[in-house]
Image (cartoon, rainbow, N blue to C red; front, side, top):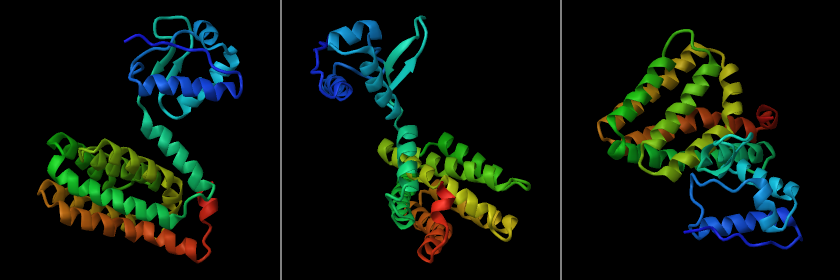
Length: 251
């Protein structure tokens, strides 16, 4: 089905370009993988300047639905993609840092999402998914793993379980919410009095959650996931409510 581009009004030009592109996506005329015409061709069709067109394309790139490749080769130009995870994570992290959401809001969202993820993973996760999650747990348990690497692996573990749940939106939202508090959790891990003991405790919970998922005990895995999140993340919420330096931790 050919895409029919229409000129747009000059008022708030880049937003009107965005609206026109969105309409083509909603109509099914633009799909992931489709390439937009070159700027020199598309701008006159819209009846706008190339700078206004670029502004609209930058917005689409920021929200994860377009990637622009500079140059003149066959892979150059703008292409429609589906990359929601990074875009949502970036957006949520900024809004969290700006105070749009409280630590308590984020924790409750994590609990709801990850309870659903672990319960569903017990039914839907493949052996390959669980083996990948197990490799992360194994690496987190090794002596000498410092908080920064642990935090990275911890994030990947929770996101991996979510992605194996069979619900793509749950996976994306889990990744975005966990990513939004990554700096805060890292700082908290770095400030614990006994890092080896904290590392061992958190990873025992990771290992047990994964074991329960493997045994198809989704409800029990969900309960432990909630306990796990409310345990460490909950201490950050308590600190925030008593005047802790949460804003500085997320800057």
